Structures are given as structure tokens and as C-alpha cells.
Length: 222
Ligand SMILES: C[S@@+](CC[C@H](N)C(=O)[O-])C[C@H]1O[C@@H](n2cnc3c(N)ncnc32)[C@H](O)[C@@H]1O
Image (spheres, rainbow, N blue to C red):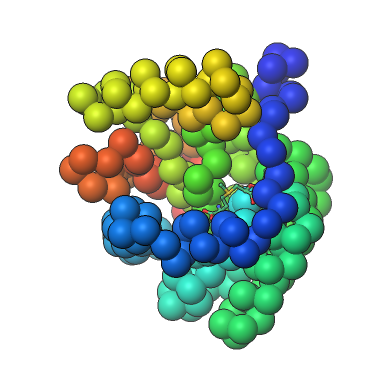
């Protein structure tokens, strides 16, 4: 692993209320995005067999906890920012969702870390370079008994190319917040090189550049 992979720079979120307002309660565009993300997540969840637990990492404020509760799963939420984790823990308790939320680093694959049947990673991987993502994918593997559900952005297509060009400009202003698209055809080899076998890949909507990927640990024998 390169130094680049070991030192990812991404800010910790400190304002759970602002995140909730932006992602869960605001503009029509965000609501549509959330609806299409949920619809795709539900469809992919339906392809994961025999799952009882989910590790949501980073879980932020627990934006997806409702989904895990509806699917009858228990949750291990992992988040590095204490105020975000506190808010997620409150969300978990208010939903009566079994499990816990802990403070932890998504990139740290420490031995004995909590594991789950399915690891879910939303709105995170595409903030990192391919080398950093490989480090992330390896760390997530340590937390999964079988499945991974991860969100990428693809750079293909007119919309994807336009967004990639916009990201380049943003990167020059604020490197930590720029998004890294991954061409559709490079997703499978990237996951495979980190020990994951891709089962399904689905765009969130025909126009979206976000893709949800369901993968399985490549050594999984059933
Ligand atoms: C864009 S939010 C996404 C949260 C959640 N997955 C969602 O979809 O709402 C990214 C979150 O990652 C957290 N974070 C940043 N670096 C992290 C790290 N190394 N390990 C765990 N969490 C981290 C931030 O504090 C923030 O809450």
C-alpha cells in the first residue's frame, strides 16, 4: 500500500443537524436522489441471502437506519465523528433497531473489529483516489462475513463526463471534497483486486452517475 493509500484526507462532519437538513429534509433534487438510492438499495438487499446484520460504515447520522430496521437487521454503525455517532445512536434507539454505534475509522482494519453479514458504505468511497479506495475496500473486507454494498460514481456518459470535469475544477479549490469517478468497466477489476467478487451493479437512476455495487468476499464458499 502506498503512503497515498494510508493517509486519506476527508473531513469529519461536525454538524449532524446541518447534515440532516441537507440530506433528509431539503430540496426536491435531494429528495429524489434519496428516493432512487433507497429503491436501488432495497433491490440489491433482496439479492443478499441470509443476512441478519449490517455494518453501516461510515454511518453518519444513521440516515439509512430506517432501511435496516425495515429489513429486520441488526446494525453496527461505525463513524469517526463523535457528534455524528451520537446522533446515529439516538436514531438507532428511537427506531428500536438492535445493535450499536461505535466510534471508528473506516480505513482501520484492526483485528477483532466488529463484523456483520453485510457491510454498507454510502456517500464515502468516491471521495478517495483509486489507491486510497483499495485501502478502504481491504479494511471493509475485514468487517464483512460475506457481502459488501458500496456506492461509486461513474465517469462515463455525458452526465458523468460533465461531473468529472466539474470535480476537476473543484479539486483545484478544495482537494478534500472533490469526488473521484471510476469508469464503469474499472469497477469490477478494482473490487476483485481487493478480494471482492462483484455480483450486481446498478445505476441509481438512468441519469444518475451513482452506482450501487453488491459484492461478495471472493473466498466465500457458502
Ligand atoms: C458524506 S457522510 C456519509 C454518511 C453516511 N454513509 C450517509 O450516507 O449518510 C461521510 C461521513 O464519514 C465520516 N468520516 C470521515 N472520515 C471517516 C473515517 N476515516 N472513518 C469513519 N468515518 C469517517 C464523516 O464524519 C461523515 O459523517
